[in-house]
Length: 296
Image 1: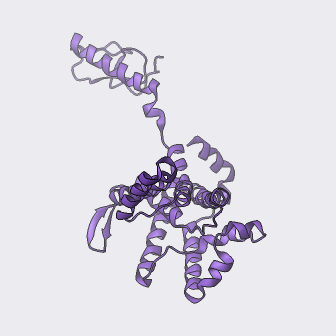
Image 2 (image 1 turned 90 degrees about the horizontal axis):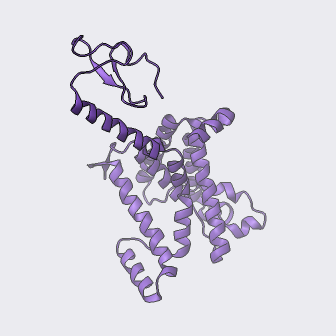
Image 3 (image 1 turned 120 degrees about the horizontal axis):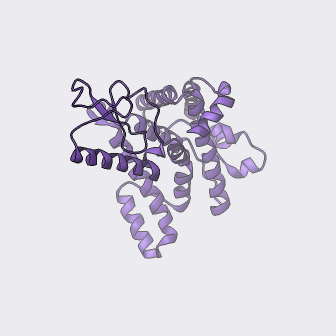
């Protein structure tokens, strides 16, 4: 988290406020292009590494205007509105700078995935922002796990369960794709057959795309966790503190303030507490619990 704080302190003023609004506008433009001339998007704007290497560098940016695939105008409007809610909520919690970083990391990893697939498999995969939008959903589910959505506009379901289902689907996509190399041909085909029954049709290039494109969520998630609470030193401190509390309760029912010397016998109106930040067995009355200097 300190890494992002330093970046934000230095470059935060350059962050794009309300970024998701502009992304939705780009999706609407891409939606209009797709409706009136789908071939134009494929021929001039879609991700195509071979054409990028031949000078059409604008494709590195224009591929993001392709809206989420949908066959219904109503569901497209609902999907765009949902992504707007996800993006603006994340920006409100993280701040504009961190949300910008998260979204731009997603775009960068999409580009990396496309180049990896081209150089490894020799294929031009027209990547869209499908996995990028999925990473937004995962991030939102981590922050608001108990928020409810109406599935099919009827059934209320917590967003964490939808994220788990999407995570399982994504994991199956990655695993079944890499099984082409990890298993013998017959076993790999059996694994793919099983995955296909669950609606997952994956190949090695799709697995690479899914894994690399979702890296922004994986990296951002682990870089912004607070690991202090599970550090060995912190665990030992909590263990020692609980052990001291149990030992004190077993040995004596008389509490004594380390600062003023008053006890629970001489001053029964006082309350006494141990300080978790002091080293050793030190107890304080309510007058000195928050004012004493910690003993190290």
